[in-house]
Amino acid sequence: MRISTIIISASLLLLPLWGGSGCGDDPITHPTDTGGDATDTVEPPTVVLTLHLTDFVSQADLSGLAVTIGDATGTTGDDGTVALTVAADADVVIDVTGPGTRPHLFYIHTGADDASLAYPLAADPTISAFEAILQLTIDDARGILEIAAVDADTGAPIPDLTIATDAAADVALVYDPTSQTGLSAGNTTVAGAPSAAIFVNIAAGSVTPTFTHLWGWTCTGPAALDVPAGSHVLAEYACTYTPVRQDVKLTDFVSGEVVPGATVSVLGQTLTSDAQGLVAYDAPPNADVALTVTGTGFRDHVIYRRTADHQALETYPLATDTTISTLEAALQVTVDDTKGILELTPREAGSRAFIPGLTAELDVTYDVGLVFDAEAATGLSAGTTTLAGSPSTIIFVNAAAGDVTPSFSDAAGNVCSVGPQVVPIAAGSYVIAEYECAVPSE
Image (tube, rainbow, N blue to C red):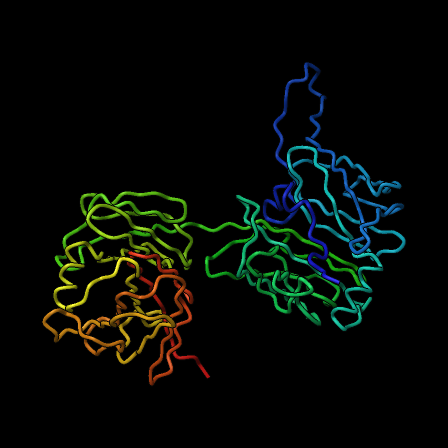
C-alpha cells in the first residue's frame, strides 16, 4: 500500500492560511449605517464552510461525525458533509469526533468567501495501515501531530524546511515522492511533495512548533497547539521571507572593462546591465540560484551561485569573444562550440577565502584543465589543483556537453557541499559554478 498523503487537506490550496499573531484575535470590522438608531449592532462577516469528511484508506464518506467550529456545531450526513457558518478571515479550530475515528483537530484560517474543504481522516482502517507500514503501535495516551507549511503568496510547498517541536515523539515523518510508501523518516521537507511533518506518538499537551530554513522563512500560525491524548491534530502555517537585493557587476575577463547591455535572467526577472555593467535583483537569502547572461560579443553564460543574506556586490568576468581568442592563442587549443567551458570557483564557507591545494575533476571528458596562476605570464597554467597566492578557480576547456558532476579533494579533507552537485553544460556555453567548502567537524 502506498501512503502518499495522510491528512493533507484541501484547505492548503483553497484558503489563506493562519493569520495574525496566532492569538485568535477577532477580525476587524467597520461599522456601516443601517439606517436604524444608535442601538443597532454590526455583525461580523461570516462564511459557510462545507466540510467533506472521508476515510483516508477506503475513501468512504464518514457519516454521523460531530463537527464543532467555535459556537457552530453540526453532524455529517450520509454523504460525509456538513456545512457550518463561521467567522470570515479568522483563526479557527475544526473539532471532529465520532465513531470509528479518533478525535481530530484542524487549525486553519478561514478566507473571505464560502469554501468547500475535503478532509481525509485517520479513521480506524488508516491507523491500522499506518501501524503496519511503520512497524509501531499508535499509543492512545499520546497523539499524532501533522504540521503543514506553505508559501503564503503562492500556496506552494517549501522544500528543505525543517519542522521541529518541543515535545517528544516516537518518530517524525515527511512526505517523500521517492519512497515506496510516500513517507520517509525525518523532519525536513522534501522537494516535489507536500511540505509537512508528521510526529507520531507525540507527548499529549501543549506543543510549540519551530521552523528553520536557510532562506530565513518566517511561518505564521498558532503559537501553541493542544494535542489531546489519542487525537490527530493538523495545523497549517503560512510562510514568508524577505527578499535580499543582490548586485552583480559584469566585466570582460581579459580587459576588465565593464559589459553594458547584457541580458540577465534570474528567478523570473529579466534585467539589462547598465553603463557600469551592473544589474540588481531580489532573491531569497542563502538560496541557490542560476543567472543566465546573454548578449552580443560573448557566448551564453550560466552562473550558479548561492545568494548572500545581505546586500552585496559580486563581480563576474565574462568570456567575451576577445577572451576566447586570447585563450586559444595562448593555449594553442581551439574552443569547440559543440562542447562547453566550465569554471569552478570553490571558496571557504563563511569567509569565502581561497583554498590552495584543492583538486577538482569532472566525470566527463575535457581537453585541458587550467588554474589561476599569479606567476604565469597569461595568469593561467595547466592543471586542476589550485595554487597558493592565486584565486582558487579551475577552468575546464571543451568539457563534454550534458550533465556534469564535479568532485573536489585536498589534504585537509574539504567537502564542497554548497553548490550544484550536477552542472548542466550546453554546447557552446560558458558555465560558472560557485561552491562553499569546509572540513567536516568530527
